[in-house]
Length: 234
Image 1 (cartoon, rainbow, N blue to C red):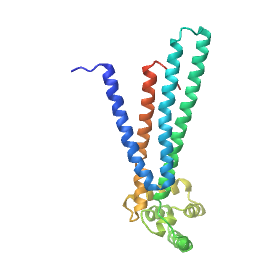
Image 2: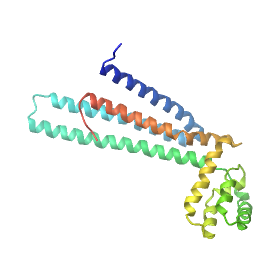
Image 3: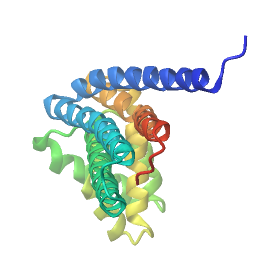
Image 4: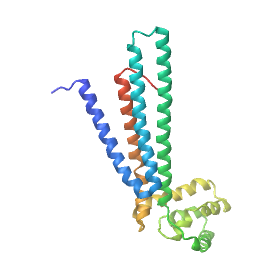
């Protein structure tokens, strides 16, 4: 049986809604696992995603009404339509910015929580041990990359700002990039950590792609209403 373009369009949008809902449900749980602050950040993301749809719909219907209002003089109608389009575009940009900001905050929180933890009382001793371990090698970055796979205080100090300073002091080129690579290893291996909080954070960090896809779904759904009404917004 052939489904017309309207039916196909609705099927696609339903699929987008389902994917968006599934991703939001997943991320509510992941954000809750990161703590109250992350949970509130995700609620802000959801509010912004909803706002994107609302302002898109409102602007589209406002433009449609103005186009169909035969009582308005042409010049006045064009001005009002231009104002509605401009205002709608600004509100859509603001909603998108809130979504992106929330996403980046969640990414930062997940990444930080996935790092191995260091008892402040043991920091000096751990730094000294790291200094000794890297002192007799021509490739201190390789030592740090290996230590970052662990779950102990040496792993924690290997991802700290101290290790980056150590790389700089040893004249290692691209110390910031190497330090980030060490942290990337720690985040990746956190999925096998004995610490449940690190494992939860690693799961959240690895699910950022799903959140990105949910953002794309929100954008596509908002564009769908504009398309139906023949309205183009930024």
